[in-house]
Structure formats: C-alpha cells, structure tokens
Image (cartoon, helix red, strand yellow):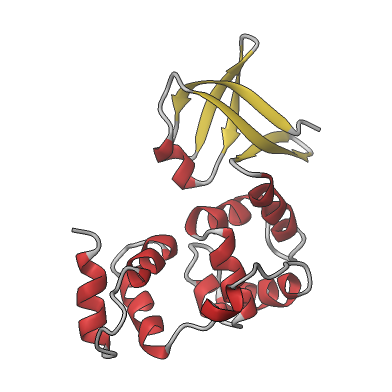
Length: 191
C-alpha cells in the first residue's frame, strides 16, 4: 500500500491533484478544501490510501493522518464508498463530524452531498464507538436550535457545512437569539 506521497503538484483537476513523483504523474483524489489551498508547482506531502477495485486503482490523499483515519473509518459504514467518504471530508472537518456524532445530530451529516437520512443514521451508529471525543468537545457539542436553523439556512444558500459553522462561530457573544438576526450576522462573515 502507498502510505505517503511527496512530490510536486503539476496539475489541479476538479476533484484531484496530479502529483509528479520520480517522473511519474499520479492522480490523487483529495478533499475539496485542499484543491484551493495549494497551487501548481508546490511540493506537498500527503497521507494516502490506495483503493483497489477489480478494474480500478484509486489513490486518495489527505493532509493529516487523522483525516486519513476518518476516511478509513467511514469506509467501514455500510453503503459508504470512497467517493462518499471523500465528500464527507470535503464538507466537514474531523471536529465537525465528531460534534455531529457526539451531539447526536444526524442532520449535520445529512447535509453532506450524497448523504441521505438513512446513511447519516448508519454513520452516527457506526462512528459513535469508533471516534474519540476531543477535549473541550463536550462544551461545544450541542448547537442551539436557533443556530441549527441558521446552519440549515446557510447550507441551503449553498455554503458548505464547514463554512456555515465557521460563520456561526464568528457571531459575537451576547448577540440576539433569533434566527433572522443571527443569520444576518453569519452572512456578514462572508462579506
């Protein structure tokens, strides 16, 4: 198995990087945030996982070992393949997944493109025993009903779950607790 890959990015595609290693260009599928973070010509080191299928070899790359581990854990969920697992990592951070699992909010997972309500429930049950809560997660694990509505509104407007959660976290403490005002403040984050 190919565990890591170090090389120069020669091309950035819609869902993958072409990384030249020893004169060979390797297509590595990566989460969407990595596609915008790096530019062609940069040297990168990726934690990787090779998926072997009957007629296909696909290489998936991640910035950290914990992201790769989450990808592998997601592959254990019935009905979740590499593309769907990558979609989860493209839409949510490890902390966001942990927050959704430990606060028992499958709606956060079902906002990921390709994840329906049943798959989100399966993911919750499977991940509950396999993920370890990070310190301090208990304090922020539960999102208020108001902020859940704001999150739903932002994702409906086309923002990713990561972007929406970041915008909600940017709302000043002591702000009014009504949906309209909090949504207005969260949208101000994007300007």
